Image (tube, rainbow, N blue to C red):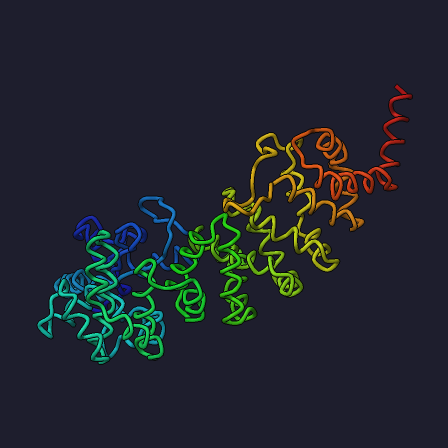
Length: 449
């Protein structure tokens, strides 16, 4: 009798199958079970990858928003499912290895060495050499051998170790690791990714310039971790943002922008963690602080910067981006692009009379010598933007004239800002044809009533 069952179709109801073998999304027998690393939930690879492809960035079972969509194969469960299917006469069909063309992202081929980005598999690799996963000295020796798959596996396990130990234990680990060897491995085509991941994982080991350079490695997980570190480092600190700009210059501004700009421009990149996106935006903003890079940044990056500015509510990210866009608006080209991205309304919301959550004493940066306030930044930006006809019209229609007049009358705004920007802005707005027409219409409506 011909078997008409589809691969994976169970003869009995799914309730008769052990629950641990059933994918919670498809409710079918799992062919390739994987664990979603962020939440520890188990799914069939096909189901969870389709979930992500549809634009979801949450765990289907817990609803938790994910910082990473990383999956790790579960070979023990897969083998158990295959044994069960064999006993029940269920055809599972072909089960491929994870990754494209038998590779793990950023790693080396699975077909020869197995999934070397899977710590469980790496454990079996090193123990086959009689090395304990907790023996830092022995693992370091395996790394120094520069052989596959042992050195790769040792690097992965050392990284896992540093992720789960406290500060005092980490100091001991750092003493045993051969840092120069790890840095040399950054030039090894087969071992550079796990070596870079380990170096980045050990916080404070690499300088900001070294971290920016490692962004050039084509590994999404590595980039995410680096961008999170950059975000923490440069957060609301002008001096450190200038260091980030210097690092980008040293390693090629255009190549760095080619990596980080798509992250804040492309909506599909929102699945990346918010902290990593903040880091990407702060790198771009830091380059806008350098006058020599503003034309390049304006041409390529204003849409992405403006988009992230609207998206984030964190003042330590939001205000430095606003300062960067203010600089970019000093040029005609930058103003034109910025106005098209709707920045006038965003700067208006930084004026205390418009937004009562903003105070005259709010600073853009936290470092001691960066005396730049949020209202000052907004007024400067609006002054430059007022030289654009479209922006000027938006300001008049948005009632900014009254807000600027109120700010001039207060003692909380510095005399320097009043004379250089606020009074000049008020003069431009109040003498514009748009404002005069609006005023005439108001007077006419008043007299008519």
